[in-house]
Image (spheres, rainbow, N blue to C red):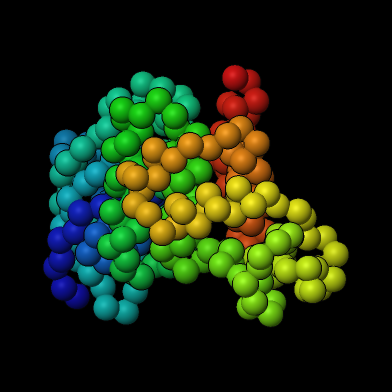
Length: 251
């Protein structure tokens, strides 16, 4: 057992027995880690944080060599992102991003680009008045950086470049050219502008992608395709995505 330090965003937490918490973080140093915080529910002042969802924390933990379940001995809150918590839509969007990170990334699979992306997106939510756009860009970027992305560069079946019409296949995970469309009868048509938008966001930084214009038609199709892809390959719809859908319907 070794003692390590890490800086991470809180992905989720849950009660453990009557006194403790189980906390999941995505850290810069180790990727996704899970740890027990003993005694915090009976003595909240024992730690300089309350492990709020999507807050940024520095922790000291005993890292077990034969288990992914560690013991967090010290924790300090670095940033609470209070501005996000004043808006239901922003807080739900931040929660969605944390749930997506937790669902896609494997335990202790370090990826500093994913950590930087998540932190940049959370910081952007404090000042940007378009949480829907932030969430859409975040989905595309995290799928690309994690290697989990749909295949949009060429035909997912024959790997040939697609110059004209194409369809998107959920089951195959990418575009089909006219010659390969028969391989998935449930594939759906997709706008060329949607494909161009995805490729642009994949190749550019998160901050520069925020300035990219998206007309409502392309934005709607992006959400349909990305959400369907995530649901299909994760085998479920994220709880926070369902809440976001209800918020958007109510606006």
